[in-house]
View 1 (cartoon, helix red, strand yellow):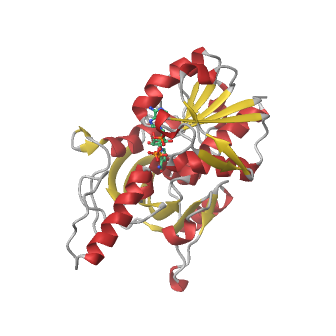
View 2 (cartoon, rainbow, N blue to C red):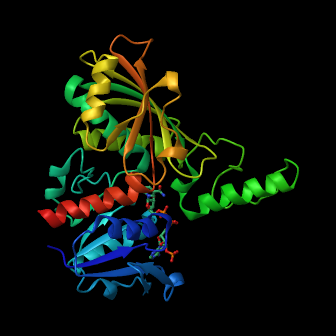
Amino acid sequence: MYDHLAVVGATGAVGTLILKILEERKVPYKTVTFLASARSAGKKLKFKGEERTVVAMTPEAFDGIQLVIASTPDETARDFIPEAVKRGCLVIDESGYWRMDPEVPLVIPEVNPEAAKKHPKGIISSPNCSTTQLVVALKPLHDFGVVKRVVVSTYQAVSGAGLVGTRDLIGGAKSYLDNGGVDKYAYENFSAPIAFNCIPQIGGHKERGYTSEELKLLYETRKILGDDSIRVCPTAVRVPVANCHSESVLVETEKKITVEKARALFSTMPGVVVMDDLDNKLYPMPHCCTDKDEVFVGRIREDLSCENGLAFWCVSDNLRKGAATNAVQIAELLQKS
Ligand SMILES: NC(=O)c1ccc[n+]([C@@H]2O[C@H](COP(=O)([O-])OP(=O)(O)OC[C@H]3O[C@@H](n4cnc5c(N)ncnc54)[C@H](OP(=O)(O)O)[C@@H]3O)[C@@H](O)[C@H]2O)c1
């Protein structure tokens, strides 16, 4: 049992939701401390009906803390986590920095809970938001028919880029409408205006024309499913949606999975909700999946271009299941073990 928790990055888009989900899910602990950068020291946050003060993150701030849930930028996670571990903390990290370290488990509780049992570096990573919803949906297909190849195109919300992403959408949309369709907003986060636009780049350019966000869909999927033979062709696109990532997914499996079988497999997968009735215009969309913890799957159909191919569409709240909920579920796993 971990009695003293800390939430690092408590003022951010993911961090504020971690607070809410800790309240909702009644995770057991005795004390919780809220940490962020020195900029936020003294700021007040509402937690369980009380005002709580944010403390600046210093090495000493980790003394006496047993379990940390951290959602900070990669470079911050790189620097502070070894110090927190040295001071006795086990860290659940939302950042991308430690995910591919072979000594750091990458955990989705519905998919690979056993991986959370071994954490030789004192760190457990939570996957990238677009990977989490993909892998939750792929898991039952992989268990039944062995996934060989995935083609995934993402439609990612601005909240995936943190609070500045949301500012860019709202500020840009207002400026565009106020100025008769001319974008005068000086965007802070993205490489182009995001209001009334789509940007086919998320993350830096990395290898063979793929961005860092796209490569996460390849490498993190393989690590979580424990199968390095899975081939993934990803395209990640930022769209002017406030919250919830959507994905168009084509899957090729070793064993044929019919549409009916796929629907049955998705229906029994924990954490998946099937929303699939084209005739009645029932399919997952960001506006109805926001503030929910599940991965919503619809538009399930045969891939007409491939013998053992299946196509589907999935939507999930990137801040919840894609980040905060997943991390809190990992904390619950640890509290139970
Ligand atoms: N947004 C998503 O959908 C999502 C999904 C999965 C994973 N993630 C990952 O989660 C992490 C946080 O993302 P976010 O969207 O919540 O970003 P965000 O809204 O920008 O929040 C960042 C948080 O980190 C804190 N921070 C920044 N520099 C710090 C420092 N030097 N020392 C201590 N705290 C510091 C900030 O504190 P101040 O307020 O004091 O600056 C803030 O609380 C990122 O690594 C991101 O890749 C995000």
